[in-house]
Length: 199
Image 1 (cartoon, rainbow, N blue to C red):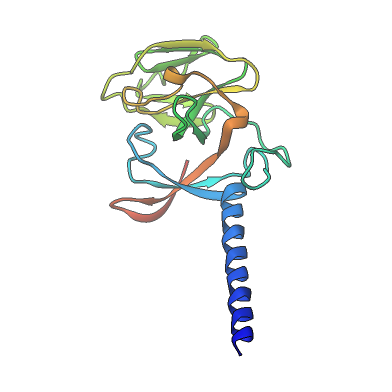
Image 2 (image 1 turned 120 degrees about the horizontal axis):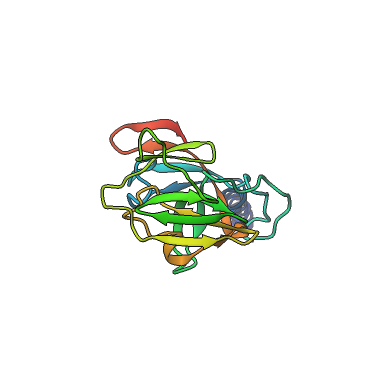
């Protein structure tokens, strides 16, 4: 009787362990969520937002590693992405404003890519980054000026709240291979509850 009970416990424990490993592998490789801790991406994201992240967007990886199994889409200007800060390893969510080969200039919080200013002529608080219309938060100024020429395989990640974002202006370009995934949508906003706001 004791032997049968032990086998049952071991079998159930193994099933539970396999389920947990499967869930973690899925989060590592397929999709995950991200909690937005600060206002560095206002007005696109606000502190407390919960964001759905597609980890297959830039290529499928072996779970718990950075080994790529398949190629995905290239990282594009305007994408909101998840990566670890080269400065301190902290997980960040920022917008890709430039890709390899781009020359970047930032003055008073406004971007010029390859000599072309991105601000809307009608409203300087709006920039067109790739095909995304981005409403900037310039309430705290534009942050530090910055210029860089990106090498192939690197991207520049900047917050939409230009005066209150520790981003690529402080730690420089990030290797494309370091990007975990693309933020697809806000699925929960404090005060509004569950919704689906595409990014």
